[in-house]
Length: 209
Image (tube, rainbow, N blue to C red):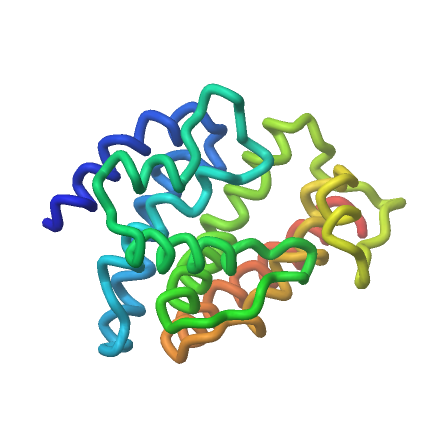
């Protein structure tokens, strides 16, 4: 394995395992697997850029930032990445966040792969588990019959309102299938999206929605 990637894995595992189960190191490992599947179909992409971006993509997430935690930039410096590689990795990371539907424009195939790989882990069975794990960690309701999913919102509005976990499906998770950028990402998203729809149909029948 690439030495830079090995060094990066060692540094980030301890950091991520301080996060809740929705964004722990197991999440990073799953996103890496997703990225590897997409990389097999995208021969023009730089695997090193993709793998480092996956490993670092949640380090600067505002939901988990702390004063004593190194930034992605600092970690890239620590492992010895040169300026060009660091800039490529950081550009990929900037395009990953959903941000209420206000994600930055993709500028590279590597960024598309990392974003699709991360979004794949937000849908399907694991996406359902992560949504409720995150909601539980934040003390959110499972569902709220009186809450209406927002269709248009600013990034600040998306981040500031703590909606019920089921509402989050309608505000983000069910939208991701149509926002995939790579051919393989789109293919993999189809089945996962269908599973979420089946889950929500069953859930709604049980709670009387």
